[in-house]
Amino acid sequence: MPETKKRPKVIVSALIEKDGKYLLSKETLESGRDLWIVPGGKVEFSETLEAAVKREMKEELGIEIEIVGLIDFKEALYPQYGYHTVIFFFHAKPKSGKVKLEEKIIEAKYHTPEELKNLELVDTARWVLEKLEII
Image 1 (cartoon, rainbow, N blue to C red):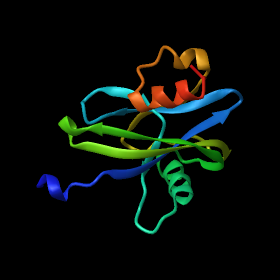
Image 2: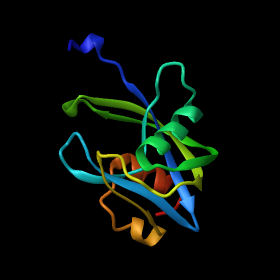
Image 3: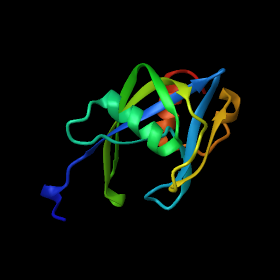
């Protein structure tokens, strides 16, 4: 695809907190590495950011969430992998549902702040966790 036709993707992610622990998922990324991420996905046309993050958590993890608020946004630019996104991070709490993984997710679990420090995190996950002073 010609460079002029490529566009950044708008992504939403939810940092889901329950009992002082945070839900992260492990996926194989474009680089081929298995890393822990703040779960999320693409915003569809005519969908609000909040509707998108709720839908993505239901699709990817099988859980319904309550949005606490917008944390911040971060651009992820890795042209070597054809990857350019603008990620909107939301703070959320689980409302209902047991974690049930979508096929592309290797693993998902709640981690204490201490456990998070030892995980292989994607850059944007590390950024948001440090921004919130969780790690």
